[in-house]
Amino acid sequence: MPSRLRRLRRLRRPQIALVVLVAALAIGYTINAVSGDDHHTGLRDGTVALSTLPAQVGDTVHLVQAGGPFPYRPDGQVFNNAEHRLPAQARGYYHEYTVITPGSRDRGARRIIAGRPGEFYYTSDHYETFRRVDVSR
Image 1 (cartoon, rainbow, N blue to C red):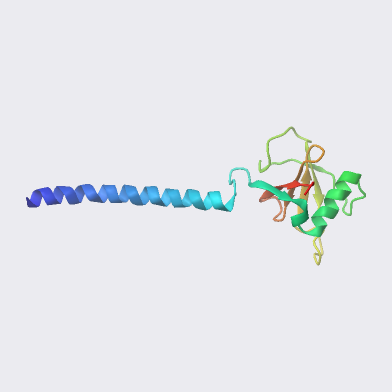
Image 2 (spheres, rainbow, N blue to C red):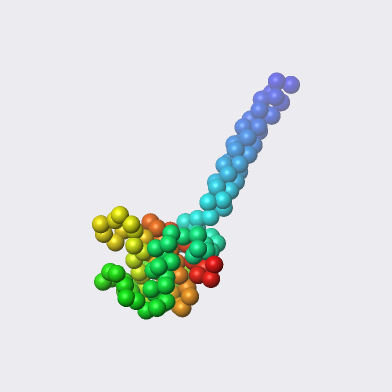
Protein backbone atom coordinates (compact mmCIF):
# COMPACT_ATOMS: atom_id res chain seq x y z
CA MET A 1 0.00 0.00 0.00
CA PRO A 2 2.75 2.56 0.75
CA SER A 3 4.27 2.07 -2.72
CA ARG A 4 0.88 2.75 -4.29
CA LEU A 5 0.63 6.04 -2.35
CA ARG A 6 4.10 7.02 -3.54
CA ARG A 7 3.07 6.35 -7.13
CA LEU A 8 -0.04 8.49 -6.70
CA ARG A 9 2.03 11.32 -5.23
CA ARG A 10 4.48 11.11 -8.14
CA LEU A 11 1.59 11.38 -10.57
CA ARG A 12 0.11 14.35 -8.76
CA ARG A 13 3.20 16.54 -9.05
CA PRO A 14 3.29 16.55 -12.87
CA GLN A 15 -0.48 17.03 -12.95
CA ILE A 16 -0.28 19.94 -10.55
CA ALA A 17 2.56 21.44 -12.56
CA LEU A 18 0.47 21.10 -15.73
CA VAL A 19 -2.54 22.75 -14.11
CA VAL A 20 -0.37 25.62 -12.85
CA LEU A 21 1.17 26.08 -16.30
CA VAL A 22 -2.21 26.11 -18.03
CA ALA A 23 -3.55 28.59 -15.47
CA ALA A 24 -0.54 30.88 -15.92
CA LEU A 25 -0.94 30.82 -19.69
CA ALA A 26 -4.66 31.53 -19.37
CA ILE A 27 -4.01 34.48 -17.06
CA GLY A 28 -1.40 35.88 -19.45
CA TYR A 29 -3.80 35.55 -22.37
CA THR A 30 -6.57 37.25 -20.41
CA ILE A 31 -4.31 40.15 -19.47
CA ASN A 32 -3.34 40.69 -23.13
CA ALA A 33 -6.97 40.46 -24.24
CA VAL A 34 -8.07 42.99 -21.62
CA SER A 35 -5.26 45.45 -22.36
CA GLY A 36 -6.12 45.36 -26.06
CA ASP A 37 -2.53 45.41 -27.22
CA ASP A 38 -1.39 43.49 -30.24
CA HIS A 39 2.29 43.25 -29.36
CA HIS A 40 3.16 42.00 -32.81
CA THR A 41 1.99 45.12 -34.59
CA GLY A 42 1.68 47.74 -31.88
CA LEU A 43 -1.82 48.47 -33.10
CA ARG A 44 -4.33 48.48 -30.28
CA ASP A 45 -7.63 46.70 -30.75
CA GLY A 46 -10.67 48.75 -31.54
CA THR A 47 -11.12 52.23 -32.83
CA VAL A 48 -11.09 55.38 -30.76
CA ALA A 49 -13.44 58.29 -31.44
CA LEU A 50 -11.69 61.50 -32.41
CA SER A 51 -13.85 63.38 -29.91
CA THR A 52 -12.30 61.38 -27.03
CA LEU A 53 -8.72 62.35 -27.88
CA PRO A 54 -6.93 65.57 -26.92
CA ALA A 55 -8.15 68.62 -28.88
CA GLN A 56 -4.75 68.93 -30.62
CA VAL A 57 -5.34 65.56 -32.31
CA GLY A 58 -8.52 66.92 -33.86
CA ASP A 59 -6.68 70.07 -34.93
CA THR A 60 -4.04 67.96 -36.71
CA VAL A 61 -6.62 65.72 -38.40
CA HIS A 62 -8.48 68.79 -39.68
CA LEU A 63 -5.21 70.27 -41.01
CA VAL A 64 -4.46 67.02 -42.85
CA GLN A 65 -7.95 66.96 -44.34
CA ALA A 66 -7.51 70.59 -45.46
CA GLY A 67 -4.04 69.98 -46.90
CA GLY A 68 -2.22 72.22 -44.41
CA PRO A 69 -0.54 74.51 -43.56
CA PHE A 70 1.41 72.39 -41.08
CA PRO A 71 3.37 73.74 -38.11
CA TYR A 72 6.51 71.64 -38.60
CA ARG A 73 8.68 71.11 -41.65
CA PRO A 74 8.66 67.27 -41.45
CA ASP A 75 4.85 67.13 -41.44
CA GLY A 76 3.56 65.23 -44.44
CA GLN A 77 6.68 63.15 -44.93
CA VAL A 78 6.38 59.45 -45.69
CA PHE A 79 6.04 57.24 -42.64
CA ASN A 80 7.88 54.02 -43.45
CA ASN A 81 6.23 51.81 -40.82
CA ALA A 82 9.67 50.22 -40.39
CA GLU A 83 8.69 48.51 -37.13
CA HIS A 84 5.54 47.11 -38.81
CA ARG A 85 3.25 48.45 -36.12
CA LEU A 86 0.56 49.44 -38.61
CA PRO A 87 -1.05 47.19 -41.24
CA ALA A 88 1.39 46.40 -44.06
CA GLN A 89 1.09 48.70 -47.07
CA ALA A 90 3.30 49.75 -49.96
CA ARG A 91 6.04 52.32 -49.26
CA GLY A 92 4.63 55.83 -49.43
CA TYR A 93 1.15 54.80 -48.28
CA TYR A 94 1.46 56.36 -44.82
CA HIS A 95 2.36 59.98 -43.99
CA GLU A 96 3.07 61.44 -40.57
CA TYR A 97 1.98 64.67 -38.94
CA THR A 98 2.88 66.26 -35.62
CA VAL A 99 0.24 66.62 -32.94
CA ILE A 100 1.24 69.69 -30.96
CA THR A 101 1.96 68.93 -27.32
CA PRO A 102 1.28 71.96 -25.07
CA GLY A 103 4.35 72.88 -23.04
CA SER A 104 6.74 70.84 -25.19
CA ARG A 105 9.78 72.69 -26.54
CA ASP A 106 10.05 70.33 -29.52
CA ARG A 107 7.69 68.23 -31.64
CA GLY A 108 6.97 65.91 -28.74
CA ALA A 109 5.93 62.26 -29.09
CA ARG A 110 2.40 62.60 -30.43
CA ARG A 111 1.69 61.94 -34.11
CA ILE A 112 -1.10 61.29 -36.54
CA ILE A 113 -0.31 58.80 -39.29
CA ALA A 114 -2.57 59.10 -42.31
CA GLY A 115 -3.18 56.42 -44.92
CA ARG A 116 -5.86 56.60 -47.58
CA PRO A 117 -8.39 59.44 -47.20
CA GLY A 118 -10.16 59.11 -43.86
CA GLU A 119 -7.69 56.56 -42.46
CA PHE A 120 -5.92 57.94 -39.41
CA TYR A 121 -3.86 56.40 -36.62
CA TYR A 122 -2.81 58.18 -33.43
CA THR A 123 0.28 57.52 -31.35
CA SER A 124 1.01 59.32 -28.10
CA ASP A 125 4.25 57.41 -27.45
CA HIS A 126 6.29 58.07 -30.60
CA TYR A 127 5.30 55.06 -32.70
CA GLU A 128 5.27 52.41 -29.96
CA THR A 129 1.51 51.90 -30.04
CA PHE A 130 -1.23 53.17 -32.31
CA ARG A 131 -5.00 53.58 -32.17
CA ARG A 132 -7.12 53.82 -35.29
CA VAL A 133 -9.12 57.06 -35.16
CA ASP A 134 -12.77 57.29 -36.18
CA VAL A 135 -13.04 60.88 -37.38
CA SER A 136 -16.83 60.70 -37.66
CA ARG A 137 -17.25 60.40 -33.88
